[in-house]
Image (cartoon, rainbow, N blue to C red; front, side, top):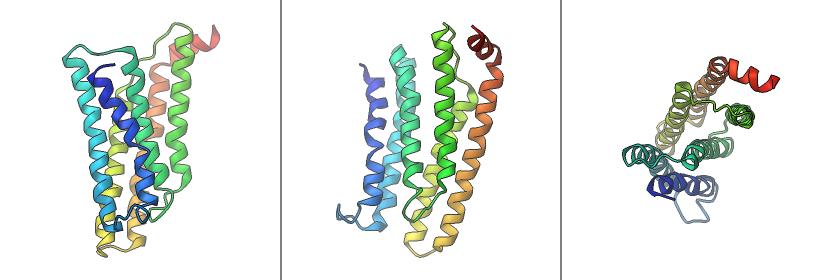
Length: 195
């Protein structure tokens, strides 16, 4: 355990708070108008900790196998938690979009595990990093759009349409990132399946 791992674990522990805040704001005694601000701050903490843990790990030579495993898991937990939360309440994202994100992680994780069992380490792709950043931006944008909605500046229909459009862009690129990952590692994947 080191400081880089601490920031990674911080994201994992913060993630379950998103649905609690989103669904139970009344029970918590928080006005709904405050909810997007709190969620935005929480998400910014998660994304900043993601930057810090990578920076600290490289700067202070704290890169570990545990960190390499935990970091993408923390990203996935954070983003999937938010997108699943957004299938309910005022956002109403289609569950199919969340399945795209979830299946991508399960599929790539399965491939990496299969190859690892054959002694082949599949390196992370730049497209995967772009995917994570894009998902984070979309989550931020949806939360940010809640602010004008709570103030009555945009209608619920407009808010939901914009949220859906943003999530659709992230889902499309997520599919592209799967193709990029499989294509770039096709030789290793084929070798792992055959042997």
